[in-house]
Length: 154
Image 1 (cartoon, rainbow, N blue to C red):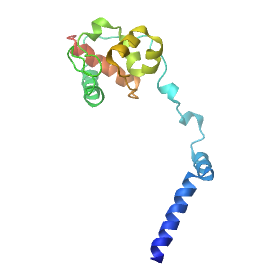
Image 2: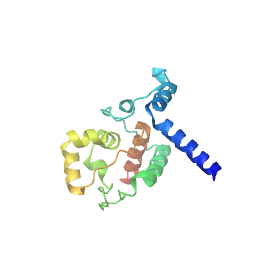
Image 3: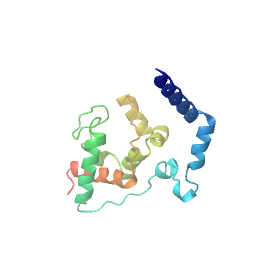
Image 4: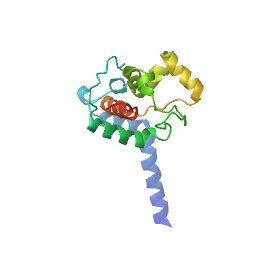
């Protein structure tokens, strides 16, 4: 019994210390101080994509990577045909949207929903805000290449 009470007191003390401001300050002091090692979220996302260069023929490695990302992160909301699931179907997206628009919708969904009238119309239609999937620009480019293949480009 005495052992149990002692262990409980130790566990509560450790938990309390970890949540106290001194514990948080100590952990903040242990964080890397090299500014080059710290990457802000704005550096990863939030930079508008202004130009996308498409190649012909399609890049097979990018298509394969894009398909994998689609299956893991996109397929629960988007179908590859015209059917709207949660979000719109992807069939024909390359004829409806510019590559830059698609890349920005993937990478900067908050900015697009705030500023872009077409993105706002899609939100009104689908009633569900597209989540930020925290993808890199190369990942988004691979998804774009997969979309091109899905639309029949070679």
